[in-house]
Amino acid sequence: GATIGILGGGQLGRMLSVAASRLGFKTHIFEPGSNPPAGHVAETVTTASYEDVDALRAFAQSVDVITYEFENIPTSALDILEAIRPLHPNRRALATSQDRIIEKSFLNEIGLKTAPWAKVTDAASLEVAIADVGTPSILKTTRLGYDGKGQARIMAPEEASEALAAMAGAEAVLEGFIDFSMEISVIAARGTTGEVACFDPGQNVHKNGILHTTTVPAQIPESLRMDAVLMAAKILNTLDYVGVMGVELFVTKGGLIVNEIAPRVHNSGHWTQAGCTVDQFEQHIRAVAGWPLGDGTRYADVEMLNLIGDDVLRVPEFAKTPRVQVHLYGKAEAKPGRKMGHINKVL
Ligand code: ATP
Ligand code: MG
Ligand code: MG
Image 1 (cartoon, protein in one colour):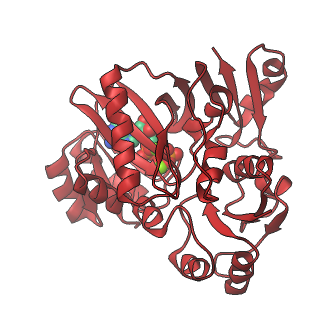
Image 2 (spheres, protein in one colour; image 1 turned 135 degrees about the vertical axis):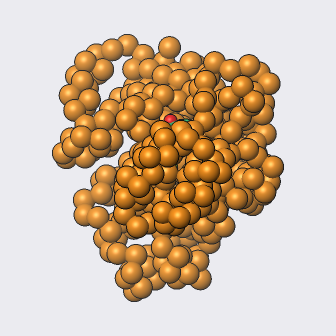
């Protein structure tokens, strides 16, 4: 069988490896960190840095197609990999989602609404940005942020310098604070022949900047459900995307606003493991392997709950609960804020 190369060995890479294995593929994980969660299930693991040209070359040559479970892959590494094997999703998708300013510019260009935003590099540009965007607002590093890291809220202009200090010199974007009634996300997929399929939008609740629960179906009118799916399809088609993408949206009185896109399987799509015949992980593997997309029709109402840090101590209780599916990532230490696993409860 063919081998799928996956950049990143976290829980997403692990669940992609399981899905790939079920379809008869082998997986090869490339991950700088030691003992990655995906390493326990993949056939092969390369532990090397993204600066290691020889390791990248050998990795690419050993696989048939390359995909990834996180978006912060250095451009220099992509140059090497892409010259050897196909990369799905493509480089434009990766470059667009790696940088919040490129991402928002792209979304606005294709006619999708984002929070009002302005680029910030120093105190002077922050002052201009605050005059433009207003307060309350959120200052975010343009690159490398996740789980709410690299963000500072600015409730009033006096808080500007403190927020700027929190960026530690990194380029940032100031976003107007959106008064949303709900957060939803669409997990969308596009195959090599251009077909698009979206999972039913899920309703997301965050706690301390980290996803806490996703519930399907999202409690939104049919018209918004349709809008969300069409917006996702527009993003994927414009990027000539192949694979699964997570599209995070704010529901407001004025309609849907795109928060951000993730060019990979997404935490808010884990419910598909218990709610669909083909879940997001298999869907992604199908897409990057050139298979037809699978049937992602939702056949159950589901609540996904993330197990963060010590939440994992509740596993014995969940293991006894009817209609609950337990997923653990095999991480040794339950540090605060660390995603240890999740449960899917069929409602
Ligand atoms: P992820 O782990 O999803 O990649 P992240 O670090 O990229 O997270 P965001 O998705 O930008 O962070 O923000 C995290 C959460 O903070 C959002 O889901 C939302 O609840 C809140 N938030 C972010 N930006 C805004 C905004 N402009 N207005 C209101 N709330 C916001
Ligand atoms: Mg993000
Ligand atoms: Mg987010």
